[in-house]
Length: 385
Image 1 (cartoon, rainbow, N blue to C red):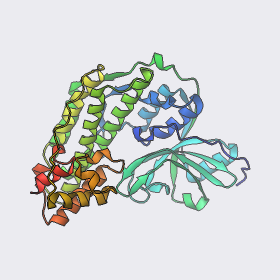
Image 2: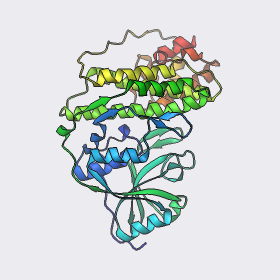
Image 3: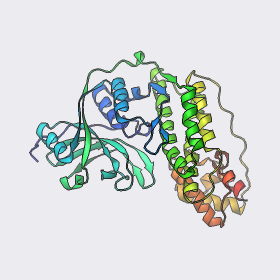
Image 4: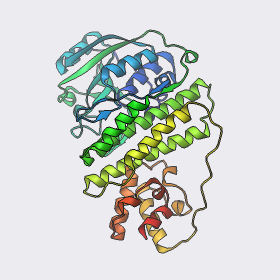
């Protein structure tokens, strides 16, 4: 490698990785690099509902790359100076020649720093440059996956590490000046007919395993977009805290994600589909307009009292949940919800349920696997009895 100069370094500390999808997140790195910490939150200025035909015939809210690039770069003050599909050899040659940084999109199946490597196909972005010690990769993506956690980081790879990378969409981006936040008021729009058509497709799909599997991706994308929009609203309001109604609504979206993933796991293992998967998504989408159309001040109702009985079943359930979450059982016996612990995720909830079924020698009824029954130790005790 002829390059002798260290490539440009990118600080990932200011990027809200958990709010961004795998295409947005490295555009966000560039935005903060050029315009300062938090510039990437402009990606959340608009919360619109759109869907496109997916590869399997079901609609998806994941926009095509061209649509996403056009929208994102306009909001972030980045201009596409060039865009081309390059083979691995062409990409490496271009980086050696000018020593610049490229934003690239390739199949995650071929990218060795990701848990998706050799496991799942999807478009994934990264930043790449040539250095004297190898190929410098920056990727700020964060997500909990079935194969481990994708975490933000920097990697220096050898030629052999990229041997599987047949080709990539390679984009050169240049800063052209970002609009001030004051000129980008937060907005949310959704066409009722478009939302209804999207949901009807999932309701009508006869292959429930396929429908619920795709909905795990859809709800994940939708929930992240709403959290990003809420973060931008706070930025636009000059640091004002999210309204109580917004916080409650985002928690409701988290529950939609968890329940959809739980339904997917159950159906994929040959169990009955838990009820209300599409209905919960419909309710959350309907609530978007109310919550994000204004700044309500009403606080959500306080949770009811937690049962205090310390019977053997409660201790067994707490022991299983505590082992999965990596917390002492006593921390769960006081009524603390599972999602109050940083280690909690949809994957951990699935593991708790499956371990409990094995531990107790039972199979939970599909009708009982709804959000109200899956938040605390006593909830699980109630459906296990």
